[in-house]
Length: 209
Image (cartoon, rainbow, N blue to C red):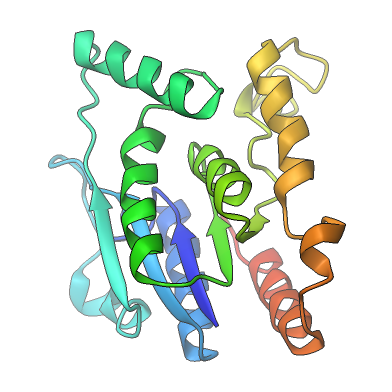
């Protein structure tokens, strides 16, 4: 089984988000899956966990593909947001990493045949929706993508009734269309693959952010 794993926060480990994703990568590869990772290049001022204590999480990952995006707010940032919208049909603040990540994913798809794409943390859900729609690859989307932070309960967000944009609503709706649970995908999933995936979900549910 080959998996395209898209998680901006994962390698190197610099916080709880990346720590959880690193554990998932370890569980996948130790379980026999071939995994290619696409993640965000860490900013220079980030304090990362010592590699000597975390590298074992990634030792069996087939490839680690770092996508660097300048976080300064300038014209290039606005242009990347616009390019992402034109390519995917979605737009929100911080989505621009998805544009370059999609390009990296498409290069990998030309090299390998993937059984699943797994996404965790925004804007990876935009990458997942685009890849699943275009290439018909089964997509495992994490429960809170793209359930944006603004709709988290107080005091973490503004509550579930907070109004959101049309494009966010469309993205939430589209996740239901393209995840691997849809009938056109499920019909091709073997019993062993389903068992493997449910084991992973159970493992993920036991993680902490």
